[in-house]
Amino acid sequence: MDQQLMSYFKFDQADLQANQNGQFTEKQKSRLVKEDRRDRTWSVVGGGFLLLIGLIGLVIAIVAGIADPDWGFRIGFGLGFGCIWPLVWGGIGVGIMSRGFSKFQVKLLRATGPVNIIKAERTSTSTDSDGFSHTSHYFVYELHIGGKSFDVQANLADIMMQGDIYAVYYTEGSENDILSLELISKAG
Image 1 (cartoon, one colour):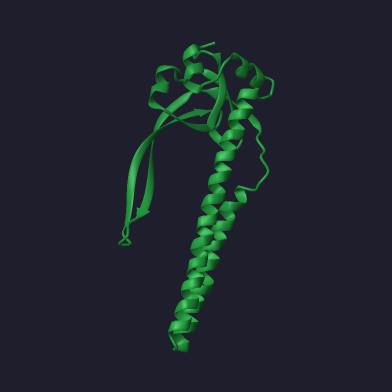
Image 2: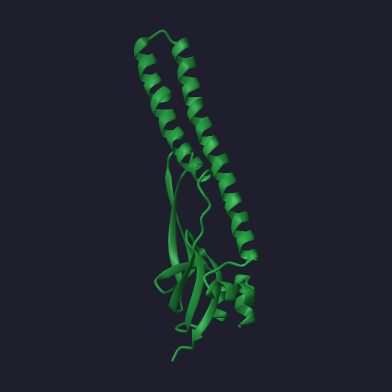
């Protein structure tokens, strides 16, 4: 077994053997449960925060409605901040929060094929406080094997050779999380 690959992806021979048999080691189970617990916590916190933002809109609408005697303003402001605002932010919050209460399920998958490491350009768009949209471009490295794509570091190309056939073991829903892998055959 290639020690560089084992160090790079943080697995050992016992992990690989368990994955080859369609199972997880206790070490892998523990790590996956820990990562899931962290993700669930952030889902509940983030969803709760968005629910709070939705409630703030409702409070603002009530206060503004009490403060202003104009019924046109009350109705318009009430619909905007009292109904639409809480529904939008609350709906997003509930959607995010529901992830925190879903059942933990993980499935071990395998992808096999020739190695292809590419440098891919990605874009992200953000809006500043003035409402102007900014698009930024950045590069990532992707490992393509058996129709699957995994984000990796550039130095993986020093360890895995283009065209070599590998089997990659990963979990469903976190395809960027390679649990272990093995060389099947050298290219050419």
